[in-house]
Length: 331
Image 1: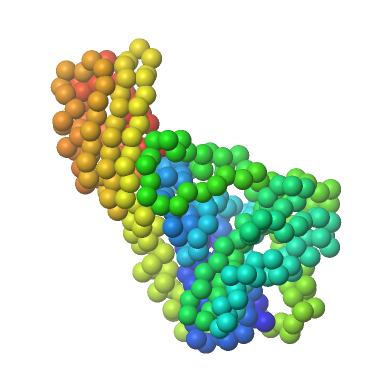
Image 2: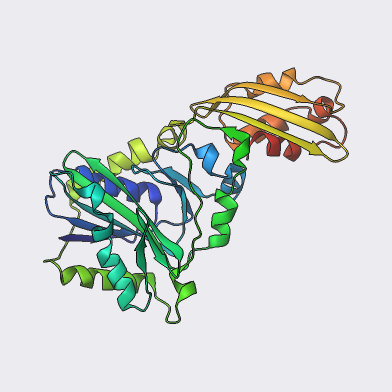
């Protein structure tokens, strides 16, 4: 087995590295890739970004948003979270049934360090009945990837800020996440575990099972990773355009101002139609704003820019401010 442990915390580069290690014909041996992402929301391959994330909060806090190659749900990752990727050849297509056995080294290492973790459900690891790890899979030709996370000291309050969305507002055309009770390993045990120490102990666990050698990326490896980083994972279309066709509806009564209802049609994360209704007392009508919103990227800063260039009081009435309308148009 080859071991690659990186200090890089850029999610786009790390996902590019992971994809390269899966697709490269250079490596035939199994690979264990250990990594972390900082201040990042990672969305599943088949999900709609606007459905899963509070985009205003994420953009306000400069959170990285990136789509991965595997399915499953949306997760928030910071430096209190560890990522692991297990990559190996799977000619007989047995990988889809191996979640439990592939997670055994992770679970056994946690157990040895005083955390009585167990495999749960289809693809989770639980501790004291709460989820500490979710896992997903991807196959490319005869190479199989299983990757997952382990929460050690993650900021779960931030997770709630970014991943809590009023989903009644969006009629989506793709897979939805399922909420689960989550916890940190170090919230459940007395002797706290440092992530770097856990990584080292996990490598020792693998050494007991197989011959382990470090993987050293060479010049051609780094060039290929950089190409994926620039052309795929740094391209907003990879994250935001996929599965970004949906209809959005939101209605709210603002005390002392009136009721406003907005309907948007989004295609590839671009607003293609906008309709605004309500009993507000503006004198200009809504057509000006509706027309301005067409072909605008469905992103808080872009929508806010349009609103700042619009006579909000003239359209909606006295006391209305830009934030009132921004909150209606984008979560």
